[in-house]
Image (cartoon, rainbow, N blue to C red; front, side):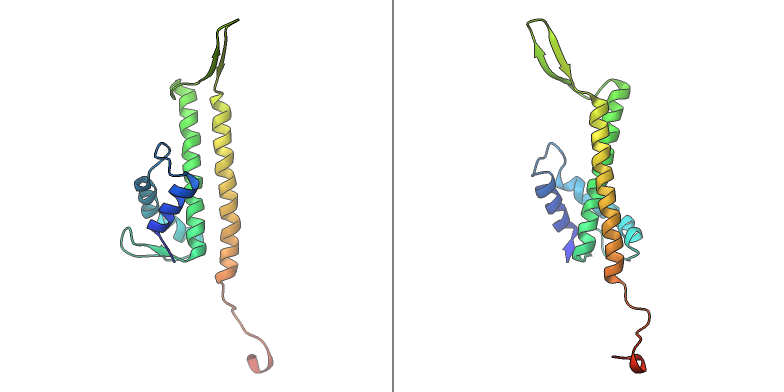
Length: 150
C-alpha cells in the first residue's frame, strides 16, 4: 500500500532530486490530497479516507504519481508561455560575449514546447497504465467449464 506521504516522498526525492527550488513536499502532498477524485475517476475506484491519510494499492499509487508529474509539467509549460506573452519570466540570457558583441537568449517558446511534450509523455503513460490497471483488477463475469466450475 502506498499512502500520500509515501508518494510525496517518492516524487520529491526521485523526480525532483530533493530540490526545493523546483517544488516542496507540502505542495506535492497538498496536490495529491486535493486530487484523489481525479484518480478515482480515472481508475473507476473509490479510494477514500481522512484528508492526508488516503492509501492506494501499488499500481494506483504509481498512476497517481504520474498524474502529479503530468500536471506539474502542464503548469510549467503554461508558466513558460506566460513569460513569453508578458515579457517576464526572469533572466533569459544564456551567455554574453564581449568581443564582437554576442548575446544568447533562452527561446521561451521552445522551453514551453518541451514542457508540454513532457506533459504529453506522462499523459500517454497514464493512459497505458490505466488500461492495464483495468484489465488487472477486472474479475471474470462468467466462469465456464464442465458443470460451470473447474
